[in-house]
Structure formats: structure tokens, C-alpha cells
Image (cartoon, one colour):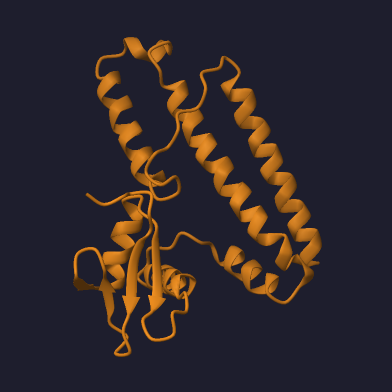
Length: 182
């Protein structure tokens, strides 16, 4: 049995073919993307030099999905990312993006928390099926971000206030970033 916490090692041969060391077969970028969506980390290394090529291939996977019309990143975000490589904001951007995705995960957890049996909507026919579908959707959307093990948010009567606070903090971070780029 493989250790899901250990990154899947992919070796790139001189022919540029990618080799899955666990299954002993060649893989495509789409195969790697599927593994990542399932919550597994990957590490891609050049067989000859030993160089870590993971970042390069992850960016290539994103570029291919974006070019197929599976757009996740708005043009203004892509533009800001390009600008960040040539400005002093370069050191702030990684922390900002990590914090933003963490807030997104937390916000999605709050949505699930608010759809509990304590909700007045729980008495509606079909509510439980709708809640289960929503939960499955959010887990599928966030599986890659959390390694497939999204921790449930703590139960709180102040969920809406906490979500508003997260939104306010995100807006502040966005304003700071835009001031740095100006």
C-alpha cells in the first residue's frame, strides 16, 4: 500500500516522457492532474540531473486547463501575477495567495456548517439529499487544496460573522496588494 502523505515520484526521461515510479508506467499531464485532484502531492524530477521540475509541470497543467476554456484565473489576476514578478510585491504574493486559498477553504467549511440539521431549512422535504450533494461538491472542489482531508470547521453560532470577517480581511489584503503594484 502506498503512503498517501508521501509525494508520488514522477521521473522525466531525456525523451521528456513522464514515468510514474509507483505504477511503473508512463503518464500524461492529465494523469498527473487527476492524481493531484484526488489529493495526492507529486514530485517531478529530471532523471539525469535530479532537478526538481514540479513547479514547471504544475504551471504547464494550469496553462493547458486555462487554454481549454476551463478558466479559473481571471485576466486581472493573471496580469497581477505577471506584474508581481517584476516588482517588490514578489515577496508578498506567495503569502497572499496562500492566505487567500486558506480563507476560501474556511469559507466553504462555514457554508457546510450552516447547512446543518439545526437550520430551519432542515424541515424541507429533500433537504438532506441537497445537503449531501452540496457537501460532496465542496469536498470535490477542495480535495486538492487540503490533501483530500478537509477538516470540518468548528461549530459556531457566529458563522456568518466569521465569514464576513474573512471577507473583510481578504479585501484588505487585495487593497494592500493593489497599492504595492501601483
